[in-house]
Length: 293
Image: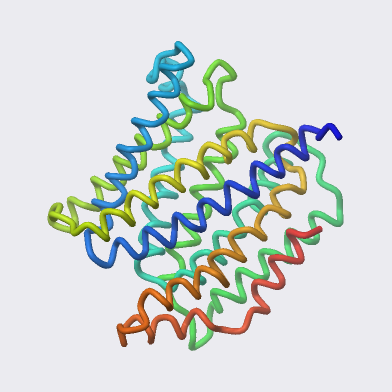
């Protein structure tokens, strides 16, 4: 059976979001033993190296002139915002909360694809997109006693990543996915250096935190590569952006929480944080209903 472009895009997006979910777990764990900025800078450097090698293999420059076009500069700006704020959200809030909020990113992409690129989005899909955003509001609980302002870091990161994804679709066709990867991980390295400057400088990491940072880089490269393929395949407003988010919901909300609790079972402070990851899930149900349609 031959898959359509939209179906291929769906599969790429599912594997991308699953990769990002595992990447988030590694980042949060590694950042407990070494500065967050150092983790991100290391990931960025490894990602640039990987995609530069891919560009070299294809016989193309890793840093072509098109990377400084207006669209790519805008894309890089959105990426900086997304990387900075979401990375802080991973480090400072429960992983399941940050991940659940990020699940709404494809819903923003669906709305943006319709408003910016004129792609057709039916009435039902608009209604279910609004339902997904309602799920985010349930997570944030604005105006209630349980409101955590730190969760807004994930919301700002969400908007940055959505802008990046839309700009990826508008990127010059002459740029290959490998070249886009070089640009994206260069921005990640820059974001890490900015955070590291505030944190006070790097440290010499132990073997285990370093291995976790390398794991984050590996899954981040996988996720970014497949995300770029997904955004440049089929329709940007297609329902794949909804369907795909089952992956991070399962990995970070359920499996991720379990792995995180297992890793920190001996740490009372981490156990207290983990209890915040076991909240009821009507919020995620709303988002998943919107995405599943």
